[in-house]
Length: 386
Image (tube, rainbow, N blue to C red; front, side):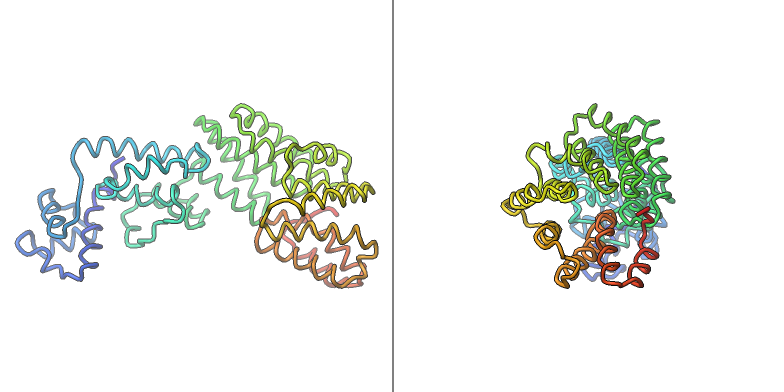
């Protein structure tokens, strides 16, 4: 879609290339136009006539494509890419890479160059748009999506409120865990707007994260309500990964709320379990007094090929409690527990730290560190009924 910024993009290209070559404005425009006219083109205050733009770019040896065929194909392709990002379909924009890599080189040297620069950060996250000099040329949609890449989600939402920016703002609040109420409000807006536009995958993600919010707060009834809808949507889309994620999270919620048999019923029947499935199964066995089975499960986890050290340490904590019934008297256990808790807070969504909170409080209380327990409960982002 052509915007004023897209039409002025040639000026940004001219300025960038001129500065890269360390040329003066006077030297570049000699015999083509006046210095004042070039200055206006570079500053985005004038579009510049097609002939002047062509001559300036030719002098800079910069290819530029603005023919009718390129623009018609390019604008349609750009809109398809935006639609994919804004609808979360595909969920991973990296799936667009083959087509993007085929189209982007030519379109980057066209009035669609701003769109290419913004979209590249989604298709190839390792190549975010870094040229802050382009910001003044971006329209509200382009700027909002750049803010998303910069993890400035509230700014993105303020600039361009749509289902996608509501979703990203809600997901951010979920990950930070500082206000699940605000997260659910954002995700509810995302779901409503996505349903109006027929963005089914975005609807699924909104319901999934709403369920996650309630799961982390141990509000099981609301969790189940949101996950039921997410489950139906995931089934309709044939998304086995999200179906498994929902089942895992729901069973983990049962485990945290003391419904050990319900949690055990799921984790003991998982096909091809992951290490974290086995971690949760070992915890269920620990709580149900099935010490022998718990140790067998942990042995199975230790024998798996995985390199997530923090997950390994989580499993070691369970083993320590099983092998040393008086673990609360062992300073080594306390040190390992507090390190895992700290790493969960700094490396993972807050729900992981919340999961380990009861054991930390148990440690503090058993060792009469009541002040530490009080401060932890007072300052912890999630308020749980423990």
